[in-house]
Image 1 (cartoon, rainbow, N blue to C red):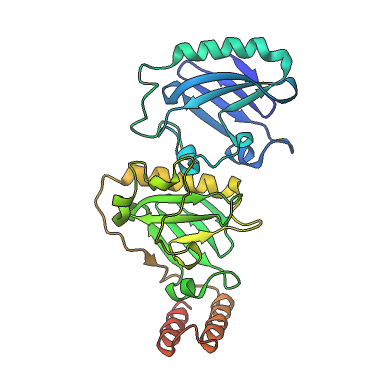
Image 2: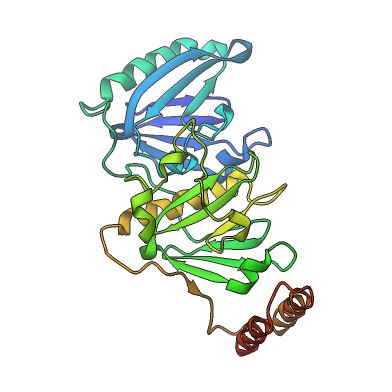
Length: 308
């Protein structure tokens, strides 16, 4: 098509096989859009196109993705607010006729399998390396490894006992992301051994739209070393969701390779002595409070000293 359609928070550039969505950088643009910057959406990733009235006379053009085509929406599992939908282009009233034209043009480009779920991700995930600050730790992803480094001010004693964690993507079976805008948000990594409890997208069945993301009988995220928990100002959507999508896409790419499932504690790398000293002091507080046994205290202290 080779045309451009400018909306309020984004501009869509139409190519022969895809639409490039460029998000604006203004202060009124949602931070998720600013974080994504731009996304190329193949027409093969779309199932339908809708055109509806918006607020204050605006017109809303929406390209509806096929289930399983976009790792960002798969990770979100229906938890995104309408205003944060990256497939939604809000246009001023005077561009209503143009919106109708492009909606019709897009419909003619949809493939014969548009009504079917995608067999693989067709939209690129945000690129690693990535990191964000959760309430109880710092999460990092370099493309092959996910790491959780606990904060002494927020992490539970269970996480301190387990130590900082690294998870090879090849050992993971999926993710759970509960929006920080909901009650008790978190990001949980699921080991490949839990594959029987997940669907083919690497997400638990409970994370589909309209269902609760948590599973009965699971360890609470604040006690689970495979999870980081969110809070006010920690793990915001524009940081934690692209992170979750990038991990999920990597998991899907490696799921055909059978691997072990155990997370590997961080070790070997030299650490800041002041950080180690602070961790030992916190460990001592847990020991004095009776939350850590003598044996656990001695073993963990030796582990921390070995990192110097």
